[in-house]
Length: 181
Image 1 (cartoon, rainbow, N blue to C red):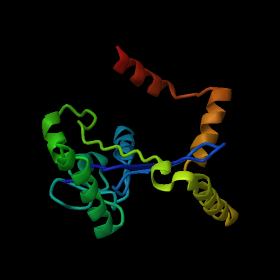
Image 2 (cartoon, rainbow, N blue to C red):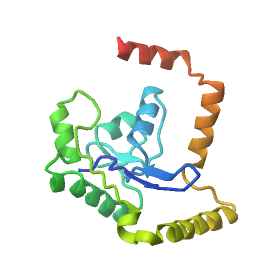
Image 3 (tube, rainbow, N blue to C red):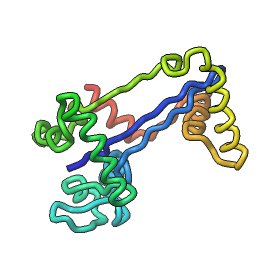
């Protein structure tokens, strides 16, 4: 019933790149399973089920069956929440409806996006700066424990690719060019 049902979040950081992250509510993103399918590689048996509901290490079978949610029943409830918010609540399709509408084409999901943007000043008024500083204290405490904030690796990779360029395998380049033709 569920797709990857991704969730994304962003938090402003004055003078710095924003704190951002996104993740799928599935145990692994569909794209990761697709990469394994293309390379004919075995996947872990806890990534998904075949069309009969059996655990499988066959990426193709999972793509034709179902992906597992992360976190067991709690992840499933979170995926259901995202389905409802980005489907029926906004008069758009659920994941299952999107797959049916795709009719086997294998394209990207159709619709099902809800974006909420909140201006902190609307809640905090003149106290915005003080509360952004509280958030910065939390980020500093996380980093002070030796943890990496989500998005830090992405920002470093972006800076590196802007400075050095990006090298991709010839087969990937050929796939991209074939799509663009």
